[in-house]
Amino acid sequence: MNRWGERFFALIYQEKIVLSLSSILGFILFWHMLTDVLGLFPPLFLPSPEKVFFTIYEKITVPVGEERLFGHVGISVVRILVGVGIALGLAVPLGILMGWYEDLDSVTSPIIEVLRPIPPIAWIPLAILWFGIGLGSKVFIIAIGAFFPALINTYIGVKFVDVLLIKAAKTLGAKDKDILWEVVLPASVPLIVAGIRISIGVGMMCLVAAELVAASSGLGYLIMLGGDDLKPELSIMGMILIGILGLIADRIILALERKVIYWKKE
Amino acid sequence: MDGNQPKDKIVADHVSVEYEKDAKNFLAVDDVSMTMQEGEFVVIVGPSGCGKTTFMNTIAGLVRPIQGKVLMDGQEITGPSAERGVVFQQFALFPWKTVYENIEFGLKYRGIGKEQRAEIVQKYVQMVKLEGFENSYPHELSGGMKQRVAIARVYANRPQVLLMDEPFGALDAQTRTIMQEDLSEMFVSEKRTVLFITHSVEEAIYLGDRVVVMTARPGKIKKNIHISEENLVPNRRQMGFDDVINMKEFLALKAEIWSLIKAEILAKHIF
Image 1 (spheres, chains in turn brown, green):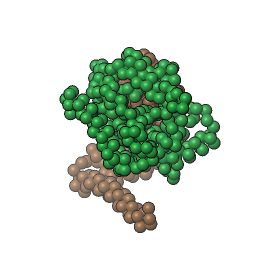
Image 2 (cartoon, each protein chain N blue to C red):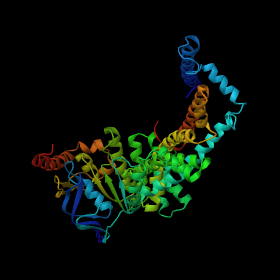
Image 3 (spheres, rainbow over the protein chains, first blue to last red):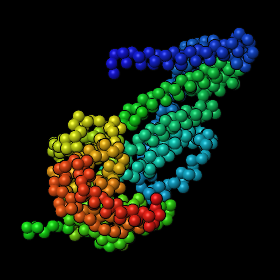
């Protein structure tokens, strides 16, 4: 691309950012109008954006419960990473094996079909019973939630690889093992990555659910505390941070997607 | 034949093959017997859905016949092998591999070293005129270029038999003509035993030593037509497609083959 082309696209790109930023600013302005200017909602019902932002600023230094704000964020991030990590470590290899070996598929499918529809939240009582109210129970709930989307996507990715590619590989002399590594796995990467993306999303939901029920730290705990202490600004603060975390996670996985699926047409 | 008896490369012996569609079995190939000699270029033509592809897949070893058997050099074919390379209509390139890596694919399983692989790949990249595209991915190529890669991939693997299933069917007319001429040239420079499927009668006569006309499903062999110096021209493989297809002899062959196919289409009402 020539220099003018580059400038042109840089301009468009900037314009997109400007638009995105103004939509967020507009939303905050609207919120400000509803609360501070028009006073339609009392502060105990819906605090103003200034109040929420001041709370965020304040809690960076002033602890809530045992932790300061970033302490709570860090704890939640660790829970997510460990939970989703364990889920992926189990789900992706199992999905590959189930997609590849039909006998294993027949044996495991019935169990999975029964366990899958159970909402992860339903595991919370057992999780607390087995792992207490610390890291273990949260990780367990997150792992349960994140496990199935990654498993199903990997399984489908492996199972439904274009038959033509497998035929081509066979007639070029590849054996079963080569076909799994050189054809089936690369071909299913797009679906596996899509599964990981869903898993992270579900993992975040499970995190909040688990922290709402039994926790003394984490973003879910802050959200719950806001309700208990009649400080809605705390809840909104927690929600905003979860939203930002989710956005960051999604951007990372999108970048990863582009990196590993370089061979797909945009 | 100067005492050089042509060798039977592929023998199909009373082969019947079933085809599964919507959980029902149809007879796709009905008691077909055919022999391909070493170095022969055989083209199968026939109405749509007549079992041409199923028959080719049987020779490839991708499908097993319900009756009869297919032999290569006297050995029964029981599964796919690198000795019978296939060029598919839909290219079947590995989208995550570059042109270079696609062509190299089969060589790795032949135990050929890295340096020698590079030499072979380079040779066939040149043969299919794709110099400069070695590091491109299939999605960056046009249809004609993709099929060139697929042909180079199979040629580089040096199979004894080349099976080509409507390889130019998805290409536009101009690209197709160029590909036909190039394939014709390649066949002269590196003689292989080829089985080629097409819908185009012109393509069949231009490329084939023999044109096999199949009946509508279930496919049987209706007629074998040998294309030779006597009924066409000498050296047609070195001539351009457009120069050959307007010759009087060519038109006569075309009319004969087309009337055979047309009779099948009309008789079975498959239009």
